[in-house]
Amino acid sequence: MGRPVFFIASEMFPFAKTGGLGDVLGALPPMLSRIGVNVSVILPFYRLTNNRHKTQQIYSRVPVGYPWAPITADAHKIIFNGMPVYFIERAEYFDRAAYYNTHKGDYFDNAERFIFFCRAALALIRNLGEPPSVIHCHDWQTGLLAAYLEHYRQIDPFWNDTRSMFTVHNLAFQGRFSSRLFDNCGLPDEAWNMDGVEFFGDLNMLKAGLNYASKITTVSPSYAEEILTPEFGYGMDGVLRRRANDLSGILNGVNYSIWSPEISRYLPRHYSAGDLSGKRVCKEALLTELDLSPHLLDRPVFGFIGRLREQKGIDVLYGILPQLMRHDIGIVVLGEGDAKFEETSQRFALEYPGRYASIVKYTEALAHRVQAGCDSFLMPSRYEPCGLTQMYALRYGTPPIATAVGGLRDTITSWPDPQATGFTFDECSGEQLLEAVLTAMHLWEDSPDLWREMVLRAMKMDFSWERSAASYIKIYEELEGRSFKRKYW
Ligand code: ADP
Image (cartoon, rainbow, N blue to C red; front, side):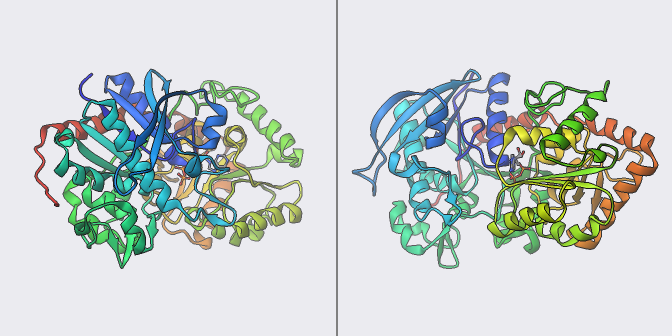
């Protein structure tokens, strides 16, 4: 089994999920565990987790250390897919209605919540007693942990042989806070510089991960290249270029034991590449469920599932919606996000009754039914670190229409390539999106055989986690074999 590898993250399906990060944590650690890696996960103990899962309390009042000396954490444990998952409990931080924000905005104390979480995660590992070989952190919420590890290594030999790895699931979310919160971190003063946690006078937790982790990965090869440029680097391209030798892109996988039309428990009828008849049943049921006109059964229906934010190009889709609706098509939008986009979606539903369905709610079950019941999937993202929904759409026989960026570029072969599995366009613009949707519509109308062949090719694409897990293991092995040379304090 080897020395432990700890995943530290703010989400993991089915315990906590707001997007792709949750899906990745729900699939990658169990896959690594199945392969034989000694893997554990540490998560915050959110109210939503507590309400739905039965955990066992294993520690109470573990001190999390300076400057939090009087502050302690409780820890819970559950065995999930044969692997331990630990939860850090502290009611004042995590016993809340949501994970990071409400409709009014981010929780005011997010910095404090995740400083606490990082310190408590390390305190828990220290208490468990076996030094890990790798601590694998994810996104800004756990970026500081890499800095703490370097700091602790100077004062506690327990951490001598522990390396950190930082995976960026989205570079745009950085955990940027006022400089005065640096004092709350309990890091040495030396960390307050450009090669540490400071970013234009602010505390930046993502930057801590980028600067201090032994290795950095992101979730697709194309995104790993794009983030080295100012256009996609969100101010971090310089830091990333400096660390380019330690940066790589590993494409996310799909958990086909959940996301598959052959077994999904949310569909009215299963189907497969061998027998597509169930897909039509799913479409008919979706039209009924969403109050859409029954005649759309014989017209193309396009689906969108995602956070309603500019990243996802939802504004671009709305911009061309009136032009699209001049054609006899249906559109389904499942998503929650910025209030202004939620309102627009509701407005379109009133304007195009029977042809436009808007569901502004996070509904996992409906996500499966939209994937299955639509003919094509819309994903006009401005940038996309990996994107999972287009891979789900491929497996559900719902060819995606997407911008050729990041993971979308790495997973979709565009029409008219003979191997096409969908439609991509270069830039997230209304013009290009409109053209791509109309191309798809015409192909659907005029060449049902070609469409069907594309659907079958899409369904046969294989993005299972085995391949990605092997790439992660390679990096863990590299880290274990490497003596630690970088020194900060
Ligand atoms: P991101 O991580 O940027 O949100 P991904 O495509 O990587 O995007 O992953 C999104 C995940 O979140 C998918 O599992 C998708 O089905 C799910 N999802 C997003 N919005 C919703 C929603 N409103 N209802 C149900 N599932 C959603």
